Length: 284
Image (cartoon, rainbow, N blue to C red; front, side, top):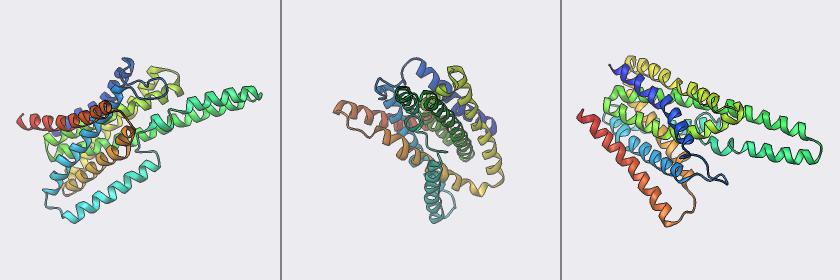
């Protein structure tokens, strides 16, 4: 029963988040406004995701880990090492999800290079260089997505094994933060493949790695149950890192009082949503 719940949750978080992102992009909710700025809907979803991740880490995953018989000193050491580890993965572009910033702008650079080269009779070289960078960016996105999704699957499985309610909350948090990031992935891959359907298929394949991670996590924790508190700490460190190093920095810009209040309210909504889902899962 637990394995079925893990596979269902990881499928929803891994592939469902891709399709939801594609649907919202199709409706124009998460598309970029002229000038590269995010539309309000995308800003709100980032705030919601940040709140959900932080609430899941601090209100559920960490308390569950520290209620075990594991040493608090060892758990805090695991938290520290995990944060540094995710920072190193971020450096290798295998965990950070801000593709829409450093890859999404490449087509514009290619266009600028095309104009400059045309005026200097160097059109062919610039165009080929731009296409090469786009293809490289596409593979980076897929590689990073696959690693991240596998890790998400392991962490969701760990949460489900600790408690069904915790697993539901963790899956919800993963789903919330994957949606805005898949928007950037789809934008990059649409440039590399030239087809919206092909982009969705490629990102969906990366998302399909999430259930694989869930299966591995279930197998691992089922045999090494003493590792569960440490895996919960790793999960919390992942959520904290993504929220503080990725999501919130994208919201850190000067805004009017109304927009700032909206960000705070959506952040609070993410926290409240985790609390409500947790209570609902506990009752049922």
